[in-house]
Image 1 (cartoon, rainbow, N blue to C red):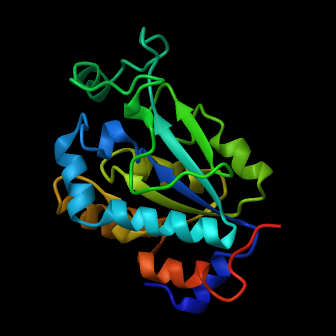
Image 2: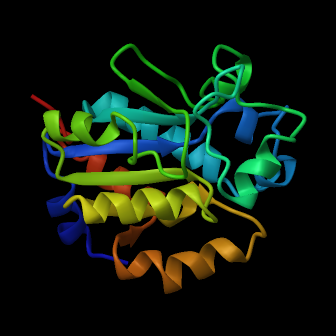
Image 3: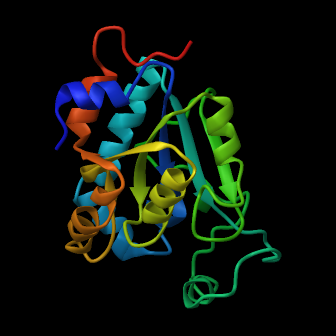
Length: 216
């Protein structure tokens, strides 16, 4: 884990953005299309830790971006070029625009200052969406990546952010995947090679420091 000083330097005032990935009702909520993932995100504490980080970001003036996956009711524009997409299209709960499934899930709170970015296709919240230009317009240099899943969307977000020149911080206990043993393996053998891995408490200590990580 990084030293407090090193992490504080990365989480600089006005240049840090917190990204939540697919923390939506249809993924991690009570009526999830993926009940095993939803259960893991809640029992391991990842969802609660995301909520803690979001609350601290709100308090400290750090911009929060919620990346939500959804599809049109008619499915137009949705990806179909992989087994994952075809299986998702057959799930009993669909992430359809305008339905409860695409709302950010409790206990995460969304404020008027938060940005909610929706994607209609693909695997990454940074590809084919407004996330990257929004981050650049916000002056982001460090992106804190949280949410689900450690299997697909989170590593895609991390790789895409690094490829676009951002420094990435991953609070290891604020992401989840299935099975439960997969997430620490993904973090240790893959994400740690390209991102700074910390704990939620370590990130909170920086966000909640005197003066906070406040955006001008």
